[in-house]
Length: 396
Image (cartoon, rainbow, N blue to C red; front, top):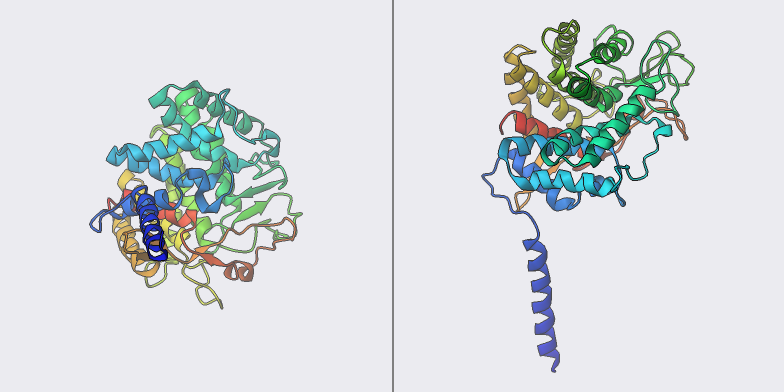
């Protein structure tokens, strides 16, 4: 065969391979809703949900469950089975035939591990696969034995003694609330409210009413304020975690429960205080209460979470209807500031704060400077998930 013929064959092979790869991708039209553009972007970038954020091996992780809980809401709205299948495939790859979670160790008492359990309630209801119920009960067992601070708050992890972290509310309480209402006639609702009360009383800044990332009740860890025990920085994603925890936990609190009005009150407080530190654009800074801080930047994941919580809170009647308009304006600002669309109508969301934490080795001191120096990423899961949640809630 001549060189020219070989070149033609090779060209046709490459074109065919490229076409095959493209046909495996989900196609989305330019006129599709933002929620579907976000979902298809995720499906195409991560064909298996455990791959989210470039994860190399299947992992039971909150990043996946945060994203898949948004898929669940999109599935409930659209009834498009590909969204349900994406969730189910993740669960089936992480749960074995006996109902054991891959590489899960209860002794770590990592409160993040509770979060993916939220996905299993609907999966069990739709499939009646007992593996899902087995895992739901296993995660409830973790909650029952989770170490607590002296005042009754869940430790964030076994390796973080006496510490409550603001994201821990989102990781545990919506699952805990759904479980106790579904299987225990709500007997643990007071304990759930207790977690929010501790955060309200100890993690919220007295001046701004906004949450710090964490609180060490013992005040022994290096990042803790010696008087209050709080970490030093008010992080916009921390505000988002707190607001999402409230609005999603309230889904399961009956209106006649003695603590329901208290939680709604907390939600109104944080909504008012979050809007008070909005930038003129309608978005939120990485260090939320210090827009003038050198190096501070508008951050997409926290902004998206707050937008979603405001919209859902208004829709549910917890917040004044005016917050829905605030959410809509901020959503439009979010698109203008952070979102770009490629030729396939897939999206890129910019300025996502990398994961930041406290303590550990090397030691993370949690200062304002530490947060503003955290590298930003594109399309990291907290921003994609928050954008998808807010787009579904606003019917965008």
